Image (cartoon, rainbow, N blue to C red; front, side, top):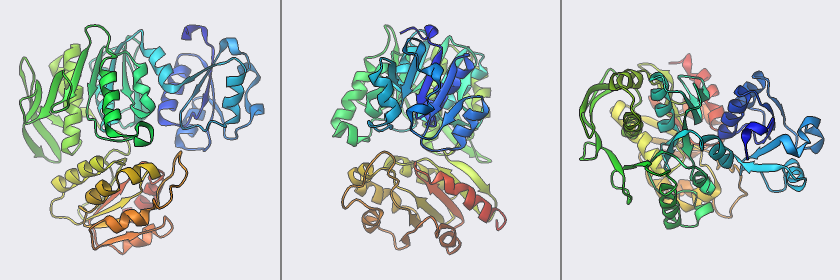
Length: 450
């Protein structure tokens, strides 16, 4: 399919973070963009403000008449949309080009120099760092992000079309539609077992992704992963490695050893060793692309992060409130490490909303271990997303396994009162569901008190 011949793009599930980035891209490229989503959110409001018409009721009569011509309309959908969706069924039954988001991303990037970030953790942050580095080095690029960049207040960085920077999502094997010139794999921890069944099958998909590289492509891998490529790591003998780590005024200062030289006194503002690792691989890919070292150092220091990735909402002497998207046991461990490194002598209250019944079931013991590390835990009910309940899989079941004397199952209605009852000096909200909607209430309630 030649996207140049397509004038109308219809999105089903346009409010998704990956879908909305594509909608922004097509709108910026003068396409006629319309969409459906189940729920009105800040993301859909932003798209509407850009001139994109969106409706929130699944009904065929809501499809604009100009989008009823199969020859010049492309329909893009997210796998989260149910199979019985009326509009999606109509398009499928009437000869339209209907593609998953990942396939469209593959079409957009196949004629570009593509840099793809894969891994079960760190994709969004790494992609946004890499996009920012290359933007600041004046590379003509488009970067599709899985989160809202603090630097650009968007999930799309647009400065040209020669280069593309993308997240390579392993969910439902989406990343196999890409053919990158450079790719990295940050981690291969078990996840999405509702799709893959077992961890070994997930690992096989990462191996398959590594073979999607274009001829003479470069693969970067976290040191220790069972693949061959350019390695990166922290305080080890990788091809790219970070050394001499210090914290000065809440900022990491460190050196990076490359295969050819040492970059000294780099500054990076995101806390946590996992974010140092994300910064390192983004830097390594930009160096291999050919970006000047001095520009990269300046750009790295100006990177401000992604919303809901260790985002500060209150930061005073008496109270710290941080929000993070972590929804896997390894990600929760990484958040805990970052908080303890920054606030070693303060009591930490974690508020966690489990995401998906299947993920809770598959990793319940690992979740219990990671959540037991905090001084106090408030646990919300499981956010179902695309799933129906699984018998016996509840937040109460998870809570029973947590080894912590100060743990409680709470409702959203009682959340503020429960936080007031705590003497914690650091509050963390964690999860990938709608817990982010509670952040504004917590921030408003405790900003005055702090």
